[in-house]
Length: 371
Image 1 (cartoon, rainbow, N blue to C red):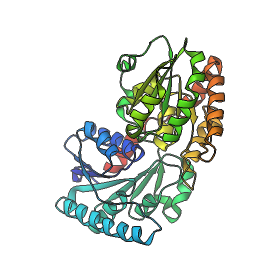
Image 2: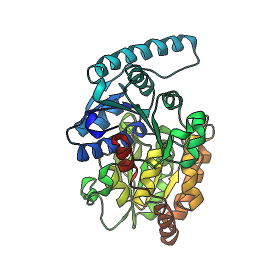
Image 3: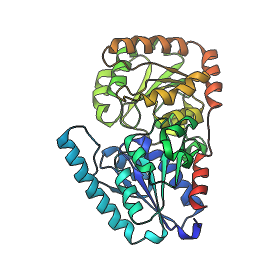
Image 4: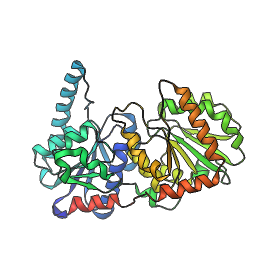
């Protein structure tokens, strides 16, 4: 496709940061290299989408699509909202069909937008950064000219469409390559102490929050050398702040962080989920990680996301045992005690994880979109 033909790029995906941050990274590069291209996001109506996309200055339009369920009633609702999203996006795309492209990034708003684009002969591309693609990405793959993935092992998941797959890594926002920000001032931290960052990803995690609150007293022994930044998620912030009280270790809770690249790069250790974007960001920042994969995915794709880091020695995986949360709490307390008291071990893990960091995925995707 000739670059002069593309004047409008529509990204379709949302519901989590993992579906939006890679798209934002690619959108930033398009804006730099092709400033006359108009960029629009079709996203979900969830609050986190507006929280992420709002500061970006890109246009975004929430779609009413919902996830697929086995419940007959919910399946009917899924079909109705799918069609509603399909016709809504088709009407918008129709007027620019000769100079547009659609890039799906996963989530339930991805498939109807891709189907609408296909019906208008608009080129469709797919970015899938999870090790195992979700239902929407699998459906979108049939429409896609190229499928961009983070892990080479993901290629086989697309079956007869595997020849369309390019393993390029995970697109990272340009903030990862910007001069460091004064994150210590932002959170009123001590610049002479190491940072333990705890995050449940963009939406937060109640189980991680609960485990951290229960082991917080055991971290007070490290108050001389460490401090804690705890990203709780918007829904859990007030509860966590109330429960945490005033621990002896320097502790800062926040609902969300718009400076995540700077915070990761300033941290000496991170505890968090193992979403595909999170894993890529840990590696790019060179920060050792304790990963608690999301426990509700039947395909365990967050565990598979984290495994390359763990195999390389840059991460430790703990099961988030929702049936016996005390086991998670005990394992997390033990591992944090070991790592926070061993600078040598942390340095070894940091060196290992940094070797896995890839930084050119966004550039590769933009080049292939416009070639």
